[in-house]
Length: 216
Ligand SMILES: Cc1ncc(COP(=O)(O)OP(=O)(O)O)c(N)n1
Ligand SMILES: Cc1ncsc1CCOP(=O)(O)O
Ligand SMILES: [Mg+2]
Image 1 (cartoon, protein in one colour):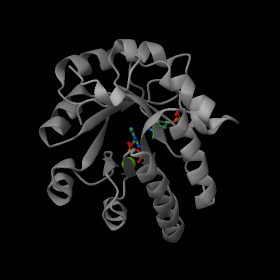
Image 2: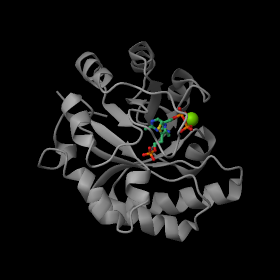
Image 3: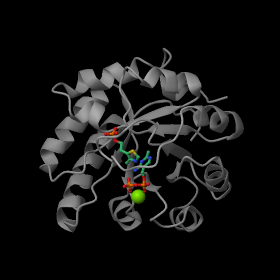
């Protein structure tokens, strides 16, 4: 997953109409989102499948990878690009064996560099740290210090994602600390103009096509 930098858009955990959700995500992609995660913790299996399918169409049209949170079976059924796994989800090594070498597999590491080193060893494509700031989406999430991003990006070979309460105002210092991607829900989806909101994050990253810039 070399070269990934930029805004990592995560969908809000809501029962939004699939076409409306797709329209919102398309706007954020126009604003500069580089990676999309479908995250819906709800029990409505049919609604989840329909939302994810609508997002896959939008992401394919824009050549942006779609990652499914938690649900490996949904990712397989849909032919999505990968999955994001946390401590309550399947283990990264078995998911890598199941999905093959090209799948994008993200792993939550909360505030632990040791978890990130283990995730990299077991085939993670990227690791995520957070919540770095208080998160409206996950108020009780473990907190990770921005300084952790620096040691992670210095010592790991895979991209480092920061998540939790990230705004265009506080995101710049996370990038300066070493984050390759900023994962955001509220900062984009709670804004009236999603394209403009995404653009505010995208503009924090260095100029040029982020996908063309290999991570050193
Ligand atoms: C990019 C990214 N980072 C962290 C998470 C959180 O994953 P997890 O700890 O499994 O919690 P849930 O999102 O499943 O509630 C994430 N989804 N994406
Ligand atoms: C899924 C997740 N894990 C840690 S914080 C978070 C939610 C991030 O959402 P927001 O950008 O609204 O803080
Ligand atoms: Mg999870």
